[in-house]
Length: 226
Image 1 (cartoon, one colour):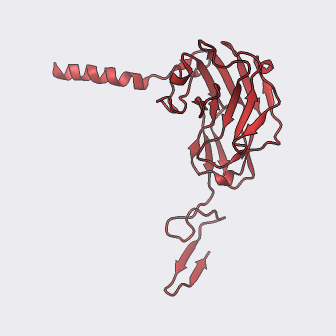
Image 2 (cartoon, rainbow, N blue to C red):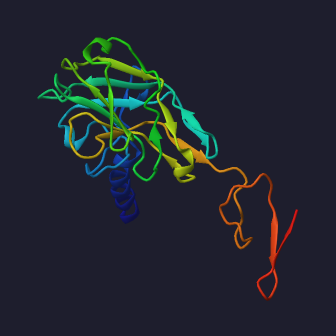
Image 3 (cartoon, rainbow, N blue to C red):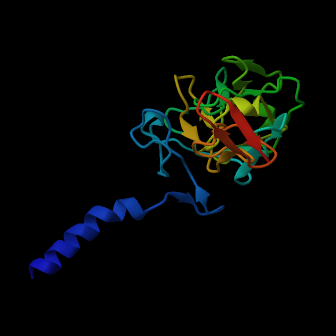
């Protein structure tokens, strides 16, 4: 009896952790948690900071960029409103702010040509700007976004990849002009470092065309064998 009761309690406690909020028309998460909402980067039905609004922010797929490449080209970004919120969250006079991961020192290529499409393309001003050292794209909103409104952004490029950490991160999106992202991209961006140096080889985390062994003798002389 006690075992059955304990199993029932455990199932009740774990059930919320196994549920992922999705918009069934696309089978994609409706919302990915944002900064300070208590559910950072976790799929949920709505953001605590956005009331009952449900907004999806997604790239096309996970992407991997090589640390030594001059720039990375992002796939198309899609912003889709499932529930605009009450009151409406994305309104005339507001902005969309797409930001790079806070732990990366990369920046957007401000000379890149961007294109905007889908049924809500007429609700934004295509004269965009960049903020925070070109790390945030700012898109002015000229009309309220309602349920079913979708905006796609194509052409974003990232410069200075070598200033990012070799890890996976996500783009952020702020829709209500508050500090920090309200939600994160469904997919990840990953920086890959080719042939990083190994532990205690004297070249830890330096990029080389091939792995090398470094031997240091007493007296300070260094010999490099390839």
